[in-house]
Amino acid sequence: MRKIYITVLLALCCSTFLKAQELQSKVTVLAQQIGTSVDKSVFTTLQNQLTNFLNNRKWTSDAFQAQEKIRCNFILTLNSVDQDNVYSATLAIQSARPVYNSTYQTALINYQDGDVRFKYAQFQQLDFNDNRVQGTDPLQANLTAIFAYYVYMILGFDYDSFSPKGGAQFFSKAQNVVNNAPESKGISGWKSFDGSRNRYWLAENMMNTKYNDIHDIIYSYYRDGLDNMYKDAETARSNVLDALSSLQDFNQENPNTMIAQFLVQGKSQEFIGIFKNGDPQSKSQASQILATIDVSNANTYKQQMK
Image (cartoon, rainbow, N blue to C red; front, side, top):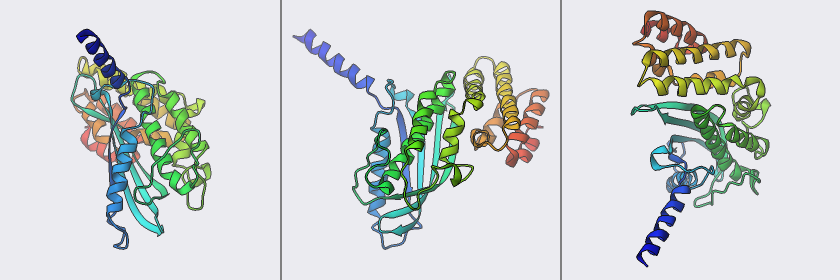
């Protein structure tokens, strides 16, 4: 009897393990710009519901151990109430993954989406269905569609960083959200004509076979580069330099694509940290390359990578 009990217990534990969720998400809702006419407890409820929506849902069929969960932050800044329960907001998305054999977390995504408009009433259920993204109320559905879209992007970049083109299935899911996105007055960011830097174009860039090199660049930078710093810093640094050089070539061949800027956003200090102990030649090469693909930080690279 005891053996049977232990066997059943182990089976239950394994079942729980296999169903372990993928994300370790922190959601922050900032509502300082919203007037006193709205009960502020609504925003605490929204924050808790979004956290549960992200962390308690299974987004993949893979098993994740607790230490393997993907760390990510979502900061939803409410800018205005356009009508009853309808908000315009900005969403900051950040995700990171550990560098092998170190305590360092390297950023995968550091992006701000300014085209967030949604409807939310306190305790409203947050639903998302890959097969019915539109939902019954487009403005309600837009909230979870945007969050689900970025979850798939986070998964895509994370998987791409660990295996060649490993994130393909998740970029496809993100594009499915784009193709079936809610449509209503005031909803934007899902169409090609909504701007040159939005959800449409990010998904398009990651799914466009013309831009397949991007997936190789991601893998080369993280897996061949950063993950090998612990055992052979010089070789790892050379691999990072090769990845950045490939990104420079990509940017020259495909000017004005969203993805090139997306990949370097918020990573200037990481780049400097990688090369600060390198030889003068690698520092000079890195500085020149980074100045062309991360123009806003060109002077910083010049000053700190002498």
